[in-house]
Length: 281
Ligand code: AMP
Image 1 (cartoon, rainbow, N blue to C red):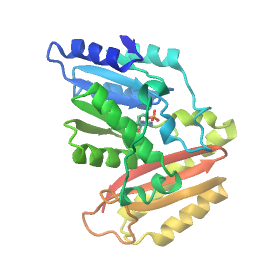
Image 2: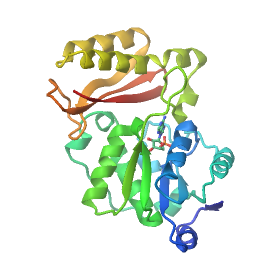
Image 3: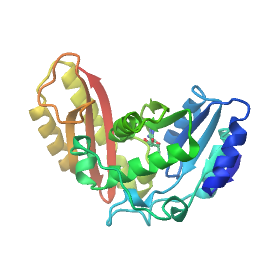
Image 4: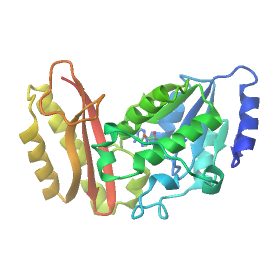
C-alpha cells in the first residue's frame, strides 16, 4: 500500500494502478476511520478492482467556530486499517497541497437551503470543492459515500451531473453501533452518559418511520412531538423533519410513491449528531 501526500506522486501511482486495466474506486474520508468507513471500502470491491482512500481533514468545510483544530487525527491507525482492507493507495495531502492558491468556490442553490446546509453556512460549498478536486486528482471510475450524510450525497450527485464527472456514484447504507447509533468519528467527543442517550435520535427516526408507514401522511404534529421528546432527553435539536429526497425541501404532506428522507441533526452536549432513514410513501 502506497501513502502519497503530493498530487503529482498520487497521479504517478494511479497510472501504475491503472496500467493493467483495473477499475479504480475512491473512498473520500476525513480519517479517524471506523466501521462505517471500512464498509465503504469493502463495498468498493464490488464495483472496482483497486481502492484508493483519501484522508484529508478539509479546512474549507469547517466554520470559524467548528472543530477543525480538534477533529480526531489518527494517521497510523488509519493506515493500518486501510492496509488490512487491501487498499492500494492512501492519498493524504496537507492543506497547502490542496489549497495553494484558492480563489474560486462552488455556489449551491436551494439544495443547500435546509438540513445541514441551513445550519452550517459554507459547509457544502467546502465539501463540493474538495470532492471536485479529489475527483480530478484521482479520476476514479467509481466513488463511494455514506447515506449518513444524505444531503452531501445528493449534492455530490448533482455536482457530478452538472460538471460532467464521468464517475459512478454509490451510496452505502448507514453503519450503526449495536444500540443503533450511527457510527461517526465525532462520537469520540461523547461522554459516557451522552453516549448512552445518543441512540435516542435514531429511535425517534424509527418511531416517525413507523407512524408514516402506518398511514400518517401529514406528519407535522408527529415531528413536533418527537422534537420535544428529544429536547426533554437532553438533545438540542438543529432539525428533525421530513424532506423530499430529490429536492431536499421539507414535505408537509406525502404523496403516494414519493421518496423522502426522515432526517435529524441534534446536539448532545458539544457533539453534533446526524442521522436519517429513507422512506417511500
Ligand atoms: P467522514 O470521514 O466523516 O467525512 O466520512 C467519510 C465518508 O464515510 C462519507 O461518505 C460518510 O458519509 C461515510 N460515513 C461516515 N459515517 C458512516 C456510517 N456510519 N455509515 C456509512 N457511511 C458513513
